[in-house]
Image (cartoon, rainbow, N blue to C red; front, side, top):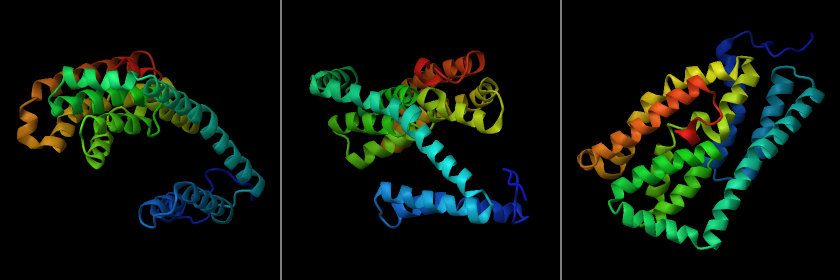
Length: 253
């Protein structure tokens, strides 16, 4: 039988989906539960993915190998290249002392840590997500928050929460572009549809991240700042995603 992407040897949508999810389950379980190093867990996930594709779904060995190589190349060049450049710029600002100037300016401009969370974790994080994505915004904003006196675990958690609103348009719209390549749907159409859902979450996230840090009463003390941040991000996010496309949504917003 000639292999196609729609071929389901299990003849059961639930079973087929469960088998297809095995590589992700192995990857996340290896990292979170077993404490295996990330690069080793990634190799294990790749091996399981190849096994599922070849043995489970009958994908030709040559095609599976070429698909793995293509995926590695796609991750290394379009994605890895973006991250590498942003990390380079970050290290440059640290080595030249500009990062210390930025930290001092933020501390003087917004001495209230609740406002710092909005400004750094949400606003800066959204910009870094749009420019690079793939974990970079959490690493950079987490480092800034730690240097401002936040506990490391709290800084990372707050940065992750704040990153939920812009992540769909991360790395110059890479998730939307990749989805367009897989589905065959226009990236502009996908951008518009996603851009009609996310602004509601973008409006909520600043309140959520402050509430996670300082509690509900603490959030009430700075709700105007949270509202301004949410609106000023959500409105451009909606307009750019619907009128332009997925590429500059987070950066402009």
